[in-house]
Amino acid sequence: MAKKIKINLLLQILIAIVLGIVCGNFFPQWLGSVFLTFNAIFSQFLGFLIPLIILGFVAPSIAEIGKGAGKILVATAALAYLATISTGFLSYFVGDSVFPSLITPHALSDKLGEANDLQPYFTIKMPPLMDVVSALVLSFVLGICLASVKTDTFKNLLFEFRDVVTMTIRGVIIPLLPLYIFGIFLNMTYSGQVATILSTFARIILIIFALHIGVLILQYCVAALFVRKNPFKLLWTMLPAYFTALGTQSSAATIPVTLRQAIKMGVSEEIAGFTVPLCATIHMSGSTMKIVCCAIALMIMQGMPYSLPMFAGFICMLGISIIAAPGVPGGAIMASLGILASILGFSEADQALMIALYIAMDSFGTACNVTGDGFIALIIDRFFGPKRARN
Picture (cartoon, rainbow, N blue to C red):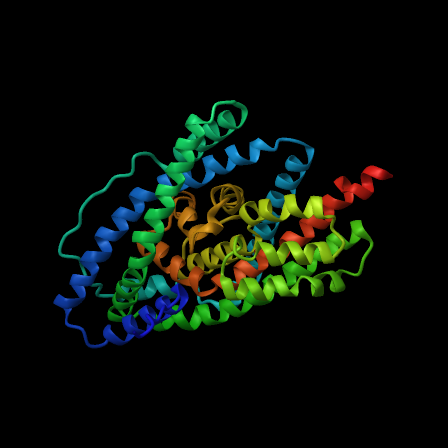
């Protein structure tokens, strides 16, 4: 019996992009509108799910973190959040400084003005149960309260709700995502936008790759100030975790390797065993970097106004909304769609393009997240490890 060939999500997305570009050159309008009808319904369903994704990810994570309340927990969570948003601000300043020289302002908006887009035959309205801010506030209220109560009944209900959301993403959203991306690139090719987008983002991806290497070097230089070790030797020790994450595209699947390499760097087993699994869900430097850079690039291309105060709010909210998302393929970008729309004003087409760009770089973002967990473990071990306790 022949083995069933499995194609990973990245390859599926790449195939969908290529097919969308090719088919956009010869599909008749009536056939293109069939796929746009699917996209219209799918985007409504995705919009309905976004608050539920935030609630399902954030509330259980806060409740779980609260179980081990203590100084080490607070310090680790604070350091992970600080590293995440610091990378976001660094990405903003790099993007704001470099991208305008690489991107023609209004390049995409001018194309849109001339475009003859495909139109869906119909759509089905699916209004979300709550807006994004309400979902975040409710997540915090539930998570913080459940972290302090003794009963497990409601906690278990919340964890089961997370399982339902995760199952929906894995069983419905992810399998249909390539078809959705196909429809987006089909429409962009039909309207003449695709060449502008691809030529621009090929350069942007190179900048993001260089930036994520720079972020890792900076993180380990900071750790070296505390542990008095060569930062490049520390980073070299973490390379097995980096390359494992490139292959698995999963922070959770890389935990055993990250744990082993953190101990090799000199982190005590107790601290490594606590910080590495925790940081796998709350430290998202690489993911934040990709989302911020791609968002700035897309806003410049469309002539959308942006500012530091706008992105400051976006980055701070992003660092919260994407915690616990690494367990799901593309989970970080899925959890960020709500604030991309509510804070930055992204349309459904913008969000779909963000999904495609994010997943295209998913391996590198995950590798950055995972490798950066080691620098957090080093600092926490310096202040709370067994050696510190004995001194």
